[in-house]
Length: 439
Image 1 (cartoon, rainbow, N blue to C red):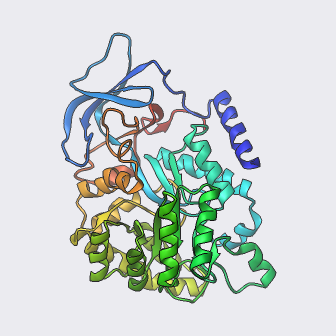
Image 2: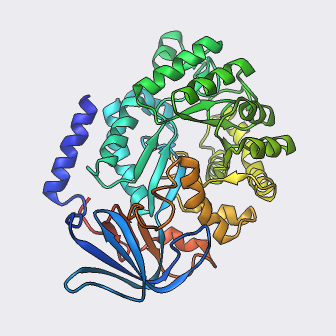
Image 3: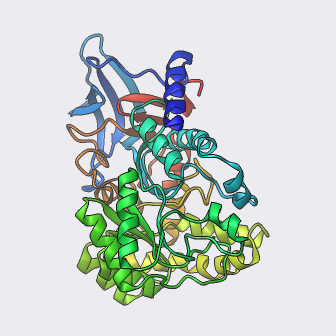
């Protein structure tokens, strides 16, 4: 409650001090003149000289040519390429990997983490990502960020959040190697052993406010343990997690590296897999038969290898990073060739916030066309997130979440690394490459 109050006060201060861009008045119609417009990445059709008409933060219609009612507000993007705001399906807004990350876990309160998250969320929005899924962080901090962001109290993307993840006791999301009284502070509150206990912690996490359930199905690369990246749950435990979440109307995504863990999670009915480093032909068949999504998080693999080679990781973590990181590109390539549904996700928080567009270049290395990479970050990500009726495209009734870049992203996705215009819910946050407010 204290954190929510702090962020609420921050929102009031932001409005008073010009921290957030001023939205258009609810009854004002805004005309966005787009030199080139990819309104619906699903069909890949690019319009020339089109106008996106917006009111009350939503798309009203798209008109041919540059139109505007007399005296109406016009946003001039006649020299830009305009498309829907981007979606990152895997971020950690309240954290960023550093050599002293574990020490910061002990030192920083939930309020401290939430304040960090305010800064990181702003960077993410300014980079052109108007929706994110936050997949792991302290409940009070993450849910306060989500609620304040979705209420428009500070510059931030729309946030969908899991909060604390579900992990096997002593598994990839838990801690070990410390004195018992230290582990009592550091251990994950949703650790579980046995199907009944796993069902209980899922219900508990939903009760605390989770939009989606994240389960750490296999060992983790960045955990400070030498326990590998194999499956860490029994089939009964995974089935209890998924069944319980689905009965309560929540989707389940699984952190999974090894093939046995990926396949066990898919057989249990998870809705998506994060990382998927060692997926095999059986994995591809299971993805397709279950209709599950794959989020490859190539930036995470690239980042941890660089950190390991620079001496920035503990020995047990560095060994896993050098082993797992290099295989992730190949996994993404095989999954795409095999027809698996895929969504854009970076695991930012491992990498630096605001650099989320770096995933596009890695997807290109994995054989994705620019259009398919854009689909991953728009229409496919929206479907994965369950928001395809409001995001991922620019259609009547959808959110007025719009970005613009110079150049042609269908030829070179590196243009996303320098987004020149960002609008969320009809409010302009970046124009000409510069923030429109002080914050």
